[in-house]
Each structure stands twice: as structure tokens, then as C-alpha cells.
Image: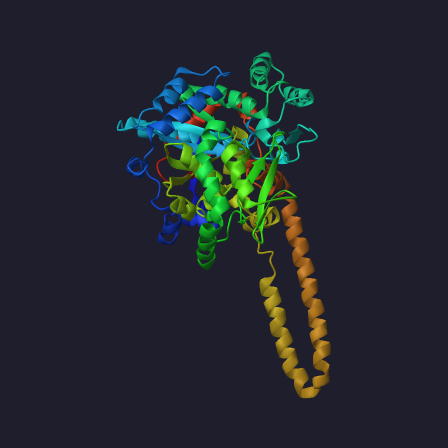
Length: 529
């Protein structure tokens, strides 16, 4: 049950560029094109010309990637439908976090599912929800853990430096399994958890494990999962990588955009390099391709441009886009009309519109995903009792408890009037002293400074005494802040879905039904969970 919702403007937890984007200010339009709406999605299909030849390559790649996965009828139909010229995609993407990682990864997936469902109700074209697995990322430390009941559970595996995460083999993961299993005891939960963990078995890699788990959770909605690290799909990336090597297309386009963004008071989300490519070797290690003083290099090894282009021609699958070029690759291989992401993602998508224009690839509509805050009955009761909202709880704890103490005290314990009276007495005394002996003024000032500090100490002790009377309320505030803003962050970026799913197996569908209510503007929703 939804308890309350906040707009991004009310909540102010995002960056200025995202708040302006959500508010659809005219200053943002040059960086995003048309703003997201269901009607604009239908219009966008007219601008997305995706040839039958490309559709065949896409479907063949998906069938091959799903060859070891049992899929639902809904997903099977959606994959087949991609051969139809009237089928389009709504896409999101994420890293290969263990057991889906933080909650917001689920929110992103549900958002593309709900948007596709709404568009399909209009009956003019067919829309397929897509989850793009970031299998070519290489930051193992970002994905090798999850948080359950305020405990960080990590999979410590050596030798993962620069390995693309999709290729990481799931050996020595038993301790990780055991730690998670120890958090849940009843028989029903244990069996379901075994089914989830079965995807993370020795012999599998992280890409296949992620596909299996995400398919198990969202296959009923027809979600299609794609791995961009694919030899057939990378043929389409070849022309993009060529333009990057030959003309530094990303650097030129994004440099212009960054200057305009900075002039408008916005900061760049992703660092811009001369070359925005990596090379993946036969050991699945990803190494940056760099350009300095007209000299290319792969890691520490120099390479002539002609040799690099020959390598691209013969081994396109070995070339990998960075964060700025990955969206371009994605849009080149999908009949996509809208990308759904978090604030940080959408901010860097707005950096790269010029790259799409330079490469003549249609730029999709963008939408910031919805957010949720999950609270149980006791937490909701405490918030209501305290009279505090989500935005109130973002404030400093000490300021909050002080404000509550001052509001409820029967007398005014802040000594502002007394301090003002002391200043007035000091001024009167200074007038008299000035007529007698100006040399005494410094002594008078020093004495009154002591008295003012004494008043401040008295005031502080009175406030502290009053705050101590609110110790119980203080504990409740701290617990709520730890729940909603753990470690100073936001709940959705910290907690894992398992603790909610095993409390309510309808958890994902409940989120889906709440998200269906949203239209074009994203919201932060407080729901009972």
C-alpha cells in the first residue's frame, strides 16, 4: 500500500540537472530532445528505422544467448516479435551485481516492464522490455557484495582486476552462499533461496548467473535480457569504433556539450577521454585504448593507428565501449525508443546527444526511474507519531532533535532576549565609560564577552537537559534515518530485495502494480513493505 509520494522537486535528492530535466525546463531540451511521455514514445517510433537485417541479427543473438535458459512463453513471444517492423524496445541496463545488488536495480527493470505494458495497451505497435547486462564492465569491487539486515556480505575472489565481470567464473563462492542462507531459517524460504542461489553455481559465469536469476524474477512479464558482449552484435559496433579511432567523434561532440553544460551551471557526469574504447584480450581482461600526441596505445603497449584499425576489422568483438559510448552501441543494435535509468545515468546520456547526431543514430527518449522507500508498520507508526516526513528525516539528527525539544518546551529556553539585553547594557555602560576613561572600554568589552559566553553555556545546558527528555524520540529518529538513509545514502542504493521478498513473495508484483500508476513524471513513493 502506498502511503505517500514525493516529486523530485519536493524531495531534492537528485542533482540540479536531473531536477530541471524532470521539471522539463526549456534550458534542458537541447541535451535531451523531446521529453518522455507515452505519446512521444509513439512518435519516436517514426524516427527509429530498424532494418529487417538488423532485427534478424538481434533475434539470432538472443536465441543463442538464451539457449541454456528455460524461458517463459511471454519472453519467447517477445523475442520472436522483434522480427516484426512494428516492434520496438524500452530499455534499461545495470551492472552484474550479485543477487541483483541494491533495490534500485529491480526498480529500473520494473519501470521498463510497466512502460512497455502501457504502450502495448494502446495497440498501435508492440513494445518489448529490455534489460541490458553490463557484462563488459570490470569493477569487481562494485558488484561483489550485497547488504542484508545491515550486514555487508561479500564474495572475496582474487585475480579479478580488469576482468570483464560477465566472464568471471563462479568458483569459491560457497562461503557467500552459506552467509546468505544463514539469514533465513524457515523451510519455505530456504527452498526458494536455494533456487535463487542455484544460478550462482561453480562452472557458471556471472553473465549466465545474472541472466538466470533476472529471468526467474521477471520472465513472467516478458522481460528480454541481452548481453552486448556478443560477436554478432559487435559487428554493428565496428563502424562506431572506427569513427572513434579515426575521428575521436565522442571527444569532439561531448567537449562541445560539456562547455554548454558548464555555462548553464551543470557539471559533467562522466570524465571525457580522447578515446572512449577498451580492448578485451583472450583472457577476458579489459584494457583502456588511449591516444596521446597522435600515438595510440593499448595499456602500456604502443600501436599504430593502421594496426589498430586492422585489429578492429578482424576482431570487432575485442573492442568494448566505455560508459559514454555504450549507450550509442546499445541504440545501434536495438529498435529502441526510450532509455530508463537513475539520475546519474540520465545525466551522462545528456552529455552524449551530440555523439548520436554525429553518427546519425536516433537518440532515444529518456526517463528517470521511479524510486521507493520501503517501511514496515512500526516505522510508519513512528513517523506519524513524530510528525516527520521523508524530507524532514534527511536533515541532521542533532538539528532535528533540538527543534523538537524547542517546540515542545513550555518556556523559551533559548536566551536570545537575554543576550540582546546584555548587549544593550554593554552599550549603555560603554557610553558612560567613554566619558570617564576610554582606556576602560577594552576591559568592559572583555568582561561582557565572558558574560555572553556564560549565557551561551547556560543556554546549551538547558537545551541539552531538554533534549535528554526526548531520548526515546531521538532513538526513533535515529532508527528511521538508519533505515531510509543508511550510511548517509538512500535505502534503494543499499538494501537487497531478499529481505522483502521472503517476507512477501508478492513483493515484486506489488511494486509493479504501484509503478503502473505512474505516468510520465517519476516519483519517490513511500510504501508499506
